Length: 269
Length: 260
Ligand SMILES: Nc1ncnc2c1ncn2[C@@H]1O[C@H](COP(=O)(O)OP(=O)(O)OP(=O)(O)O)[C@@H](O)[C@H]1O
Ligand SMILES: [Mg+2]
Image 1: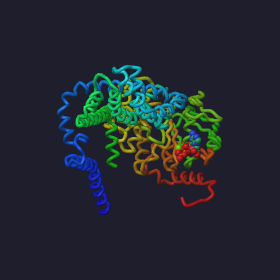
Image 2: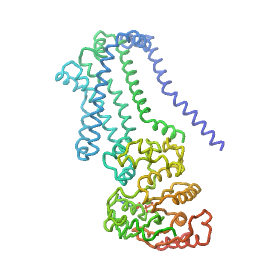
Image 3: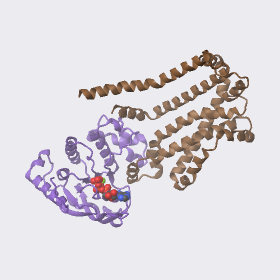
Image 4: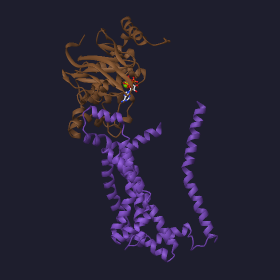
């Protein structure tokens, strides 16, 4: 009994310790970086220090508002369209097995084509406006959503399917009552990944030219060798992506209150 | 005793089923009369669930037919209600919505469906748990909720596949008394699968004992113990005589008679 307790407490202590490890590691990394730059081991114009980056970040943030809005607009539009396409395709592929067989390998292969090589083509075809950027976002977001939703639809408990069937449920009802809700957990994992990709996709699109947006801004500061501004924008992109990630998680908690409760229950055992 | 012999609800005639090259059911025929409780008793893997899958229409037999109230229902789903070995409650639906699924399938709205099932929560001992999620309930309660959902789909014929299999002995025996108690007020015919002899004898009016795979009916046993039954009946001489008889039936054909 006593031994049991002590392993229990040891487990708790080690759990707490593991939680602190990532932040501690990050902290050490940042300190080292700061020292390396401060000591002149690496020149400031080659690598700005973390503190410089943060100061610059605060300075330029007000001026970036219009760029942020443009990037977000591209990211959201692309993300939304990707969701619509992905849901339609996943549902079709799930209900028509032949289609799944035909399209699935193509989807995987399509992911090996480097977007960065395709993006210039979109500029040639669609100009410097919103469209080519949105297309890049759609391309990067589409895949994780389709695959996760397909996996979800595929992993539905066979006995539950049979139970509904024994009650005479038709396909639409089975889908609405069982398959779609059952695949929601997977679907949201895909959404979270896609959401973080969406900002990156928009920036890649802008990198090739345009009227505004964070990518365009980065291109400009790169040309004037303002590396501290470059780093500040990278920091901004990371923060925006993380916020989106969190946002999707929040929406999931709202739509699926049971999921959080279930996780808590499992955690207790 | 309280069976009404001239009101045949369900009859299964000479069904046969082979999966690949395993013969699972060789020849099974059985009957279920109105307000009767009949058990299908057999060892694990003897093909009991397969019999239910055929009766419910999920699986087509290789030969034989299923008649419900005189009509041929072989391979047709949607007539009898079928409760699986697992509770199969959907974790994303509250208990009340899980129970209301049969009404959703009949095309009613969520609110209407909830209204229909609400009153039964008390009868099934689930009062106060309507708004809970399945994982917040104990095993016994989940089985009761699954049973309620089954009852909501079709009241006259219910197939129950080891509904209490996953419960501990004490909870299980409580569920037995509870089940017999509520059945007195519900006009339901039940076909019940179990491999627990005592459970079968305690609950049933009649028992079909299945052979090992491929399944045949070894014997039909009429349980003439008086109803309503109380827990203490399980220690009476009559009860034990039936138990011993079934035990010897199940033992037959086994190579080795270990100590059971
Ligand atoms: N769809 C199927 N395809 C192939 N084999 C099957 C299928 N369904 C059942 N079987 C086989 O039929 C045999 C009997 O299975 P069944 O589930 O009917 O047994 P059971 O009597 O219900 O057993 P238990 O008491 O363990 O639930 C098993 O050997 C099983 O592997
Ligand atoms: Mg079974």
